[in-house]
Image (cartoon, rainbow, N blue to C red; front, side):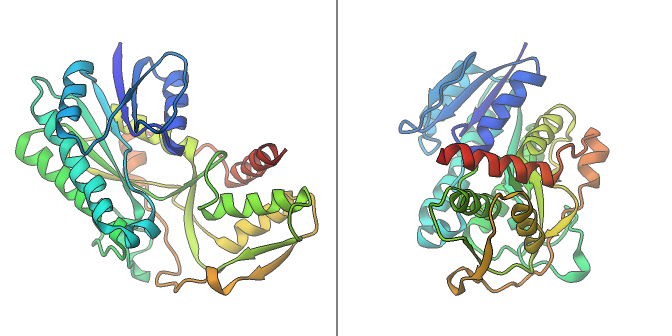
Length: 314
């Protein structure tokens, strides 16, 4: 039986990746978390790990000897990356280096999937849509810059040391259990609070004209395991729906499923300059390599996310 190690498994994506592997992959699972985090899962070995502790990373890798390594651990907040760029660089760059160096010192070669972001592309021009993996990277924030750096380092390690490393750039992924720091979950939470009379029947929004590429997190983790099995070392892969949707259309779907009459208020505090009106991933490379296809519609994702918030507020 193959053994999968998920580094940084306590978050939104990690829990769905565990679910998918347990359901659809014949692999044993070891996961890591920070000491203050909680993971309680059947048939999963849970270990505390700080990826900034180089010796601890090496010790874990030598002890567990995984076949597959999903590196999810990251400082993933764009807002926090502006407030604390040093922490973001430490976790996203130095932490990834600790993992790669720990693997490089092993006496065998596990497969590694480094999880990056569509944010790496940054300021995309209109003639570059849909965005291919070989598009110029123009990261526009500290988080995006660290993820672009992680991607380049992974590629270098694959080429220079012959390591089995692949990189993904994941675009917006959403679903039940996501925090309300993200737009779809935020709107669904507000709608659920209105339904329960916990707030005035008004949803506060920012810019609704931007179009972004949204995927259900369950489709995203299927792409991750498909790449682990079929991806090519040294290559980067976009993971997304391949279809841009306007934020206004997402809000309209939420209003359709909500059991309340809701009005919309544009909150100036939520407005951001829209440098890129449309962001849409070209996922033909992922599909050609793995046969992966999107299975869950955005309508279903939104309906289930709204239901999640209803239960949370019950």
